[in-house]
Amino acid sequence: MRLPVALAAVSMIALSSACASSSTPGPSPQASSSVIPSSAAVSWPSPTAPRVALGAVADLAVSSQAVYALYTPAGTQGKLAGAMNTMLARIDRGSGTVRKAGPFPGALRIAVGAGSVWLGGGNQFPGARYQGAIDVVRLDPESLHQLASIALPAELAQRALVAEIAGTADQVWMAYGTQLYQLDSTTGAVQSKQSLAGIAASIAIDSTTGRLYVGSDGAATQTQATITEWDTPTLRRRALAPTGGAGLGGPQVAAAGNDVWVAFATGMLGQVEHRRASDLTLVPMAQHQYTNSVRVYVAGGFVWTTDGMANELACLDPMTGAPRASTTLNLGGVVAGDSVGPTSVR
Image (tube, rainbow, N blue to C red; front, side):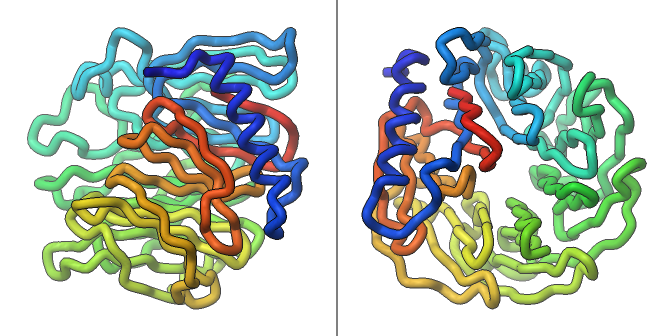
């Protein structure tokens, strides 16, 4: 059963406090996180803050000024109908003002980079691509007006692909199909590219270290899933390591500082790995049972897992990987955040 929005907000605040107050060394208790369950409302901790109803949330991004939610309005869900009606909401972190734009048919990914908001679509329905579906769109971060539309490269039309996008203050990258692209921050044109070891399944950027990570599913010529680490100034590959999730959606990566976290399905259950950023070697961690829907995030100074099949949101000890605290949340939620302030999205 879905938690009421107010209860979800209280649970999230309590969960953050439990994570920060653990005796195990970890992130600062001042760090904050932003969370949107798969069907939720947007709210702030202030008793006078507005609450804005959204539908099913596909992805979430945070800047110092706003929270951006890519969502399907309530009542329009469905494999094809929902994808055609995807909307974007911008929630100002200072005033709580909400601006909406769309629809953006087929948009599944959102990122903030180089002073813009970027939406990634793809070939989610091979052979039956619906009219008006987006590829990659660049938007103004304030008005949400479209500034550019970028056609995706022709790749593996027989497979469902999604444009995975990551950005920093001055650069934008896209992993799509078997390639990693550095995009021009204004036009979206490809500036450089590198081949991946498989088919892109996820992307993560750690702007503090200048390292970019791509999780790849197996390709036609190799069935093993991999993680690759790239140097962002040169787009030179730094490390490659095999991991799980091949043929099951591939690995999902999250990174910060010296740590890389990986989540993937095994077919029976899900698994989370902790790896060293310098060379992607495994770091021993506590074992916990997850389902195939587990995802991992680094946000607001904490490590988070969401498990849609278990309806669980949890934060992990950044040293051991053991859950510090958890709460029941419909479909586990979607997580993003930073350390700017107590912005909270439920």
